[in-house]
Length: 216
Image (tube, rainbow, N blue to C red; front, side, top):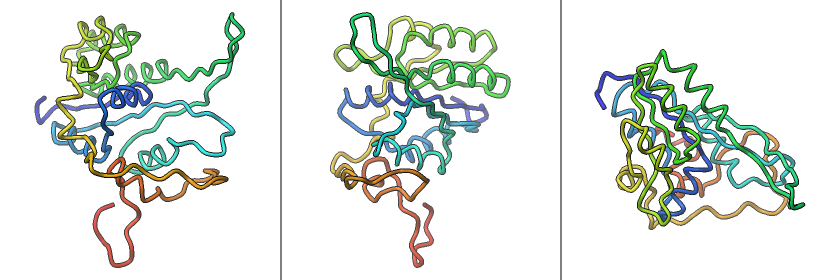
């Protein structure tokens, strides 16, 4: 990456979560943003995830609220429930189309796309971006068993970045404790400040106190 290039991050939230879980660490999203801001001009940082509607508590809601206020463009949609041919109830929440449309629309304005996903369905998108002159890096891992990245996606990318290589730069301190679960009946009907545990888990700070004028 060069200092003059225009960069955009496209984060497949569910896929990245599964990848970090397989590697046994958590992302510090503040560090992640700073890491790529240091590589060039960061045009956008998108985060995509589906949400279950009508839940009293969604464990990811505090995270996406913080991301939305701190430099990320969060894209969500409600999950859909359906019954498969075997009569089993399943939940669907695929964000591939939304990510692909945003990437193609932004392609004239960026030089480098960084895709955080190992989903092989994105191979055609990567190829389309390359035809438009955009360099594409894919961030996933081959260090897990099985590897989290599809072989066809890895082959198509201009650069493959194993997430293991970024742990020291964007990982949360393993000595820090995860957040405490919300109290029963706590709802997220409107935006609210992130819980103190989010700073420990994702590098998120609470709003500064009156005598604390440091950067949030």
